[in-house]
Image (cartoon, rainbow, N blue to C red; front, side, top):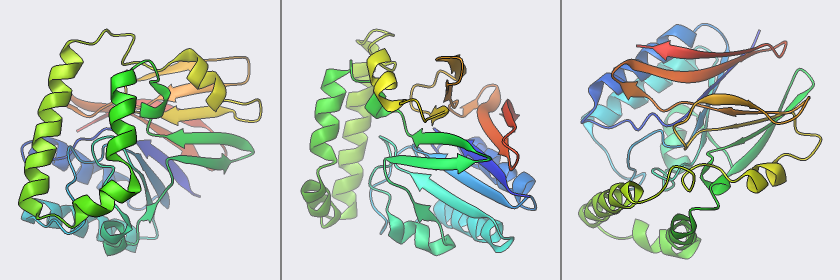
Length: 241
C-alpha cells in the first residue's frame, strides 16, 4: 500500500550536516513502504544551478537513488530558496518536478500542494522581488553565468533576506486569509504548504483544513511532517532525528 509523505523547509547545506543526516534517516525509514515523497520547497538552503556539484550533494543523490530503487518516488516543488532547481538535477534519481501549484487525490480527498510563499501576499516587497527573480528570461541568463558569480549572488540575497525579515512584523510574513480562501474553492479538502515555519493544522470550515508543514530544526532535531495512508488517514507528527 502506498504511503504519501510530505515535507518542506529542510534547508539542507554542508554547514548543517545534522539536517542532512536527518534526511538520510527519513529515506531509510520509508524506503520499504512504497512511499511517494513530496518535498514542498526549500529542500536546500540555496541552489545556484543544476550544474553545481559537491561531495555532500553527491551523497544525497546516492541516497535518493537507493530510495527510488525500492519502488519509491520523489516529487519536488520549488521554494523561495531553491527555485532554480530543475529537472536536470532530479533526473539523476528519476525525481519529478512539480508546478508551483499541484493537485493530488488520495482516497477521494482533494489536496492542493504548494510551497506557501505565494499565499503571503501582505509581504509586498518579497512578492515584488519574487516576480523579478523568477522571471524565466532572467533565470535563463543567470544559468549562463559562472558558478562563482551565482554563488556570490545567492549569498547576497540570503543576507538581504535575513536582514529584511528582522524588520517585518509577524503577520506580514504569514499567509493572507483572503489568499488562502482563493486557494481553497469548495472542492478542495486540504491545502498543504510550508514556507512560514509555523507548523499547524488550521480548520477553515467543517470540511476544509490547511496543514502547514514544519521547518527542520537542529535543536531539538525535529520537524513536523505529514503522512497520509492509501486509505486517506492523516498523521501529522514530529519527525525526530
